[in-house]
Image (spheres, helix red, strand yellow):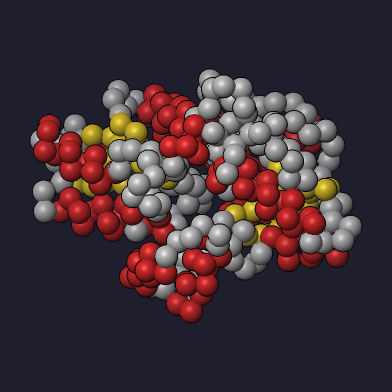
Length: 343
C-alpha cells in the first residue's frame, strides 16, 4: 500500500465508450490498437453498438457514479473534487490529469472501475496512470485504490440483487455467474510472479462464492463471456451461451439466473452479450433468462469507493472476507509487484 496521507481529489478512471454512431469505429480502433484485429471484426462489434442505439451507456453510468460520490461527500461534510478520465475515449485520462494539475491538485486517489487483478483489469490501468502523468508537466501524484472483488459492500449489493433476481425466476432456476473471458495465458500470468498465477479467475471465483453464500444460493456455476481473440488462442471457458445451451441439453434446465459478477455497470457487454445475444440464442430452447442487476448505481457501491479512499488516507485496511489477494494499491502507475500481470 502507498503511504497514508490525505488526498485532495478523487479520479474515477474507466475504459471509455463511444458517445455516438460516428464514434464507434474510432473508439474500437483505440481499444484494439496494436493487436492486429481485422477491420471485419471491428465492424462486427460495431454492429452491436448500432443495434443498441449507436453509443455506449458507459460514460453516462460513470457520470452517475460520480454524481452519487459527490452527494455522499456532501453528506460526509467533505470538500473533495471528483474527476473523470478514460483510457479509450473522451474524457481521456491525459486531459483530465492536465485539468487536475491546472486546478492545483497535488495528491489524488484513483478509483479504477475494475475489481480485478490481471493485465486488462489492473496492470493496464497502472499504465494509463503512468501515461497520463508523463503527458502532464508537474502532474499530481496519483494513488491507485486497491482491488475490491471481496469488499463487503460490493459482495452485499450483488447478493441483495441476486436474491431479488432469484425471486423473479422460476423455482429451482440455475444460478450462473459470468465475467469477461481473457486468454488462458493472460490468466495464468495474472498476479505477482510467485508461481501461483490465475489471480484474475481466482478472484472472480471468490467473488461468486461470497455472493452466492450471502444470497443463500446453494449451487452455482461460473462461466465467461465477450471473447474477442483469434480462434486458435485458448481463452477461459465455458462461454455463457454454450453453457446455458448445455444445461438445457444435458439437464433439462429451462430457467437460469445470470449474475454478471465481472461488471460494475450495465454497459454494452452486459446489455449485448447477456440481455440480447444470450436471450436470443436460447429462446428457441424455451430457456428463460433472468438477469441480476449490477452494483454501480447503488448506495453501497458509492460508500465502498469512499471507504477505499479512507483506507488509503489512514493506512488502516478494511474488512476483507475473501481468501484471495487484493492488490493494485500503488503510486503513479507502478506495478503492485515485480513482473505482476504481464500483457
